[in-house]
Length: 349
Image (cartoon, rainbow, N blue to C red):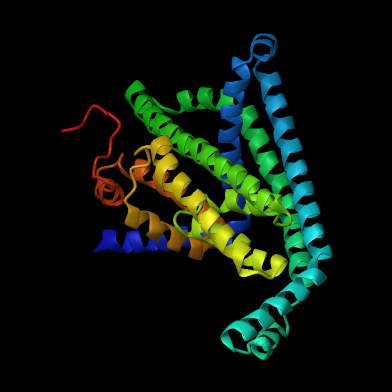
């Protein structure tokens, strides 16, 4: 009974920490992700003959960090420019919407103009986009914190390993902890890296398709597809619907809407169901039901950010839980096939 009480108190404490320390923890988690991406970039940089031979570890870290900073700044500028473009085009969108409503009335003899005007009251498209621009400014402020976290992680890489070695009295304890950390690092890093590749492919193909279709600000929608691809199941659906519905505003025609809806749907399906499984394999070892439940739970805790981070966080939980007898059963239930590895501590049955 005491164990149950302690468990409930512990879970409640963790949830309270996650909720009330959200402003600190979310940038920290993204800093870790950025550090993993930076580590992958460093590995690629070392394979370049000039960089790998001429630059030491510190110089490579600085080079990667500068690339990340420039990338953040350029991305923010592109997003702002695309939103400004959408704001300028707003008046023409209003005309197209009215034209579309007239066509619905003529074709189906259904007058929804009045209902649409009522629904539109209190909603200002320009204010909404301006709000998005303001949110991006806030994200940019967080990006600075994220970059600072990542920078310190880069600088602590060497000393962290030395400190970790001195923490343990016996070599078996050190070996077990290192195995756990290596498994977390490998699984988490592989997921972030491979998922980023797949999401980038989705964004690029989506950008080309939307640009061919003549949709305004295709980069903005491609970026949205890239980000939403990190959210399991729901993300791809939303990433398909948003640009398709927007095309109704821009063109005032059903034909482009249907083409874009089907086209993006095919792109998301092929990449999500054909390419991604081949790239990712079964390395995540997560039950599909657990993936959806994690999406809902983390979405409730951290909102959209929690949805983006739900899968990698759950992967880490499975790995950590599998290392201790008291929580190994939980890891088995969370896994896809029940096969979870436990680091050898010399005392296994």
